Amino acid sequence: MNGGSAVSGAQGLQGVQGLQGVPEMSAAVAFAGMKRVVDVVFRAGCPDCRANFELGASALRLAIGATSKTTFYSFTCPECGVAVRKPAGERIVELLTGGGVRTLRLHSPG
Ligand SMILES: [Zn+2]
Image 1 (cartoon, rainbow, N blue to C red):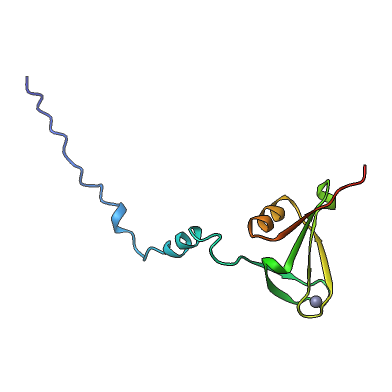
Image 2: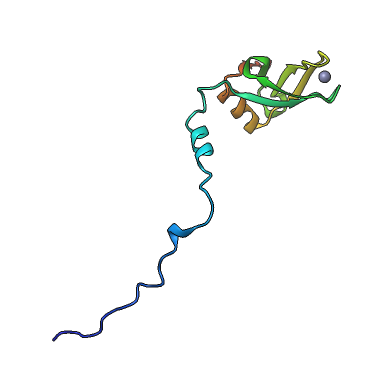
């Protein structure tokens, strides 16, 4: 009872290693590990003078109101000095608080 059929032919399988190109993942992986080590920088734009700039966490303020309508973040434009205030959705709130931005909780009357 020797079953005689040899299963031959693992020949077609040689994929995986032969991909062309250099692995480019190292940068992304490095970043993932460093979230809070380096100062987080947020990109922002000024509606007044239309400048685009990057702000550190300390340049931003986040005010969390009772609802998302009263939740906003603010900063001072480094170009023209105008005070900018923008609504902050849930994701922005997460981003800002996670990045160490100062957070104010607004107490709604009532
Ligand atoms: Zn400006």
